[in-house]
Image (cartoon, rainbow, N blue to C red; front, top):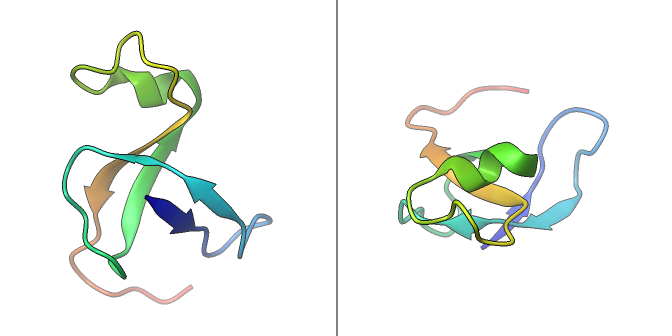
Length: 62
């Protein structure tokens, strides 16, 4: 899934993240990057650098 970063020095940057939790288009999500991204079930040996690990339920301001 294409993920647009909001907030911080990389705001507006697009990254590609594996979606194993079924996030929908337009939802705000939490993304884990680096070697920690492979800690999700069934991804231990996958060449993954970014994984969606959560969906934000309530809107927040940045």
